[in-house]
Length: 141
Image 1 (cartoon, rainbow, N blue to C red):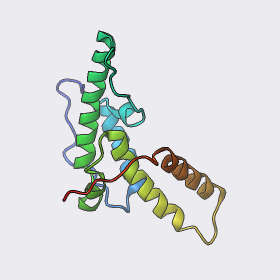
Image 2 (tube, rainbow, N blue to C red; image 1 turned 180 degrees about the horizontal axis):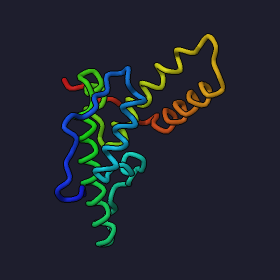
Image 3 (spheres, rainbow, N blue to C red; image 1 turned 30 degrees about the vertical axis):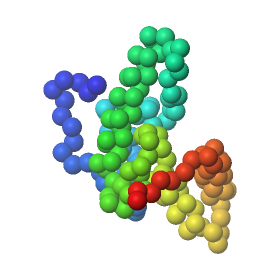
């Protein structure tokens, strides 16, 4: 948790689609300050029925961190981006949605004269999409 007596920034950065790079850096700092930055990078698995007490403790701690990170992400996006991430089941998923969205927009700008770095970015997006092929989107009725 944050050190006692420490203050939190009065205004949080808001992702509006044009400020991805700056927002990402600011959010990494905020998530690091709140000690939840690693949770958006890892994919902690579901708890098995035969889990030990230690595994249950770690899972509960990770779940708390995930909820805290997800709450911060929900507060730091505009209405358009919130609509994209509100159904995310964890903070890693909520982080990846705007990352992919902004990445696709960014690499599509350079279609006429692509560079090697654009190809690397496109491959990273495709690898992520390949790994999430079984995921779906639920629309409220």
